[in-house]
Image 1: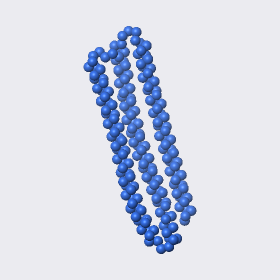
Image 2: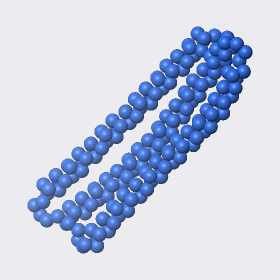
Image 3: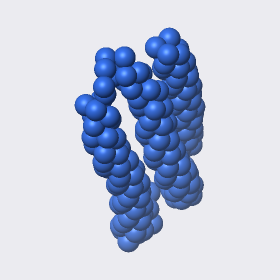
Image 4: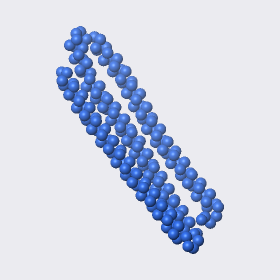
Length: 186
């Protein structure tokens, strides 16, 4: 197959280096997404504590039950809007991280595919006479693997789009329900 053992060692080394680089890139993207998620949660928790304290002070200082319920209703709308904003930001971080993962995996697969095709071409140059069927079968297997990956990639993208659409619908319904509740309490 390979003309020299050095060629085999070089091809193996190159493949391992490419896989290590891909894993490193994926880990970097994962940590960036995690870092954004932690920052979002810390910010949300800090704001929630500050706003909760201010709201509690307002409620404690209410002079009568009517004012108490009026303050409660007035605080419901901003809280719902903040929850929606948090959900949108969370979805944005998740979507961006997923897109980066997809891009990195697609690049790695394209690079690996190119190397496999080059390897098959090199092997076929040195293949003994009469092995044409085996070479054809090997090329068919690689073609089928690529077709399967393309279908998986397409299905994954559709699933992510469906998830994003469902999140948008849920956000819209939640906003409408919060607005309706706030209007009915006034």
